[in-house]
Every structure is written in structure tokens, then in C-alpha cells.
Image (tube, rainbow, N blue to C red; front, side):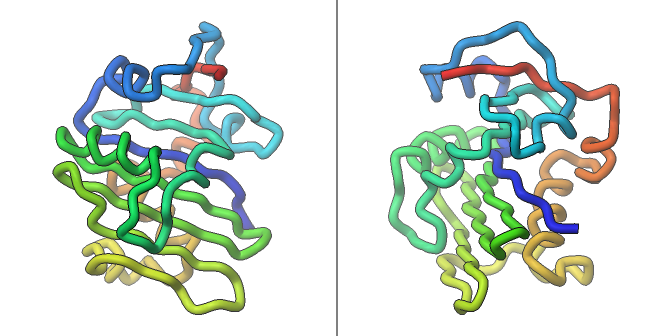
Length: 172
């Protein structure tokens, strides 16, 4: 199955800290299941706590990261600042077109970034993360699922089909 979604996982911060960093999001007070937020028809931000992480699902914003480069976009600068309190992963996962991107931030720095576009060699910055050496991490989709699962301390697949966890919808 090919997946198509994008998001940001932030460890060690509260939702309010993330909202203050993004600054322009309005709370609709409407909840959405994580599996529903991952659908391509969802056009807003879904944001909330999952375990010790803040999860943001948005199909557009993560495309603003400078994947595969040390260069820092405006989004990367916000995420680097948030990473002073915990690890941050920004990702795009588009199995339909074979486009994948990950940017990983620790202690205020972008430490790893990777961009893969079908038919082209990967463009990377930084040393491989321990998770990238996992036996489970074969293709890019599986690797991104592993990275997310490690940060949220539970399998992403469980959250997708779980009716207990929900996020709040925010709009720009």
C-alpha cells in the first residue's frame, strides 16, 4: 500500500509551545482521528499530544523543509528551536510519486536530512540515524514509519486505526 501524508513529530514540548512557534493557527475546537487526518482530502492542520510527543499532520507545510541540505528554511529554523527540548522529525511521504523527505533536528541543529525522488539517487545531509540501520527499515516508507514510531513510542499503524487517539483541527 502506498501512503501519502506529511507531518512533524516533536518530543519534549507541550502543544502550547508548538502553537506559539507557528503563531498563525486557529483552534477550531473540532477533534479528528489520526487516520482521518492522514487522508489526502484533509487540508487543515491536525495537532495534538500523543504520548510524550506533539504530532502535527499537514499535507503542505512539511514541504517547506530544505530536505537533503544543511540549509535551513524558515520552517527548519522553527523546528531547530523546538528541538532544544527534544527530538524533531519533519517528513513527507508520497508513495504514489515515490517522493520522500525527512529532516531530523536535535539540540537546536538539523543533524540529518534526506530527500528521495523516484528515479534519482537520494540527496542526504548528516550521518545516518541509528533507526536507518534497522532491519525493518527497507524502503523509504517503512523507514519513515519506523522513525515516527520510535519518536511516539508506539507503532504508527496502531494510531492510524485507533479510535482512542485524536488530534485537534487548526486552520491558518
